[in-house]
View 1 (cartoon, rainbow, N blue to C red):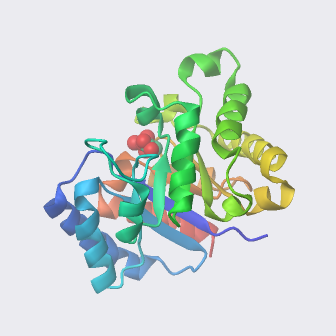
View 2: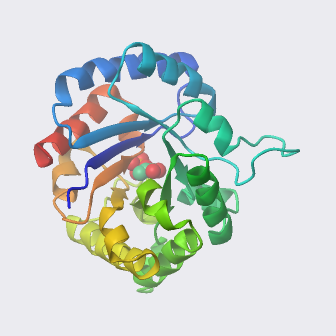
View 3: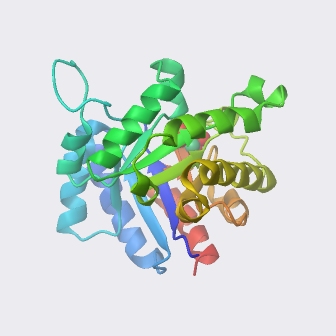
Length: 261
Ligand code: PEP
């Protein structure tokens, strides 16, 4: 059972399309020298306005980078001002879409049901849904981590089509670790990933659960990547702040290549 690693950079609301052009060119050059393992895949998730620019460079320069988006609507078309559909993203050769990032859940009222419908739309459009789950500081201190993960994961994957496992990644992103400089320990990340895999097994079956990649996200840096990836159930990292600098993100990829030679 060999799950390739996924190293994904979430640019959030940073980099206009010109800055994106420079960043992805720089990253591409660095990855051409660093990404020496076929077992490591790299994705970037720029803002919507950058997607076309990034996709054109990746295609023209044949860069080893998959294109990701940060969100999309659960609906396909219609009078939904400001929204972007999964079909629109798929047309731009987007491969991954983050679904239910904690910032979307907290700031834009994305609940478990909407996460499920959005994941369904992403998979239905032929892309991979990267479903983000994770407990808050309070939930952690109340000892509710496993309960929260069970609820979020079950709600997100229940009702997905039978073969959805192929197009599903789960990112464990404890809210207290995001942008705080306080990453989870490798033991905590592995513990949460094991729990998530057992929940996936109970809903989708053991065989499917074994194929689904589970990422860790929250204050990932070059210095903690190897340790975080040491857990057998942690199949990659979702990186926020440290993905905005090509050199730093490449160091994270280099650490992943050491773990997945
Ligand atoms: C994120 O928001 O997905 C994230 C992991 O952020 P950071 O790496 O900055 O903690």
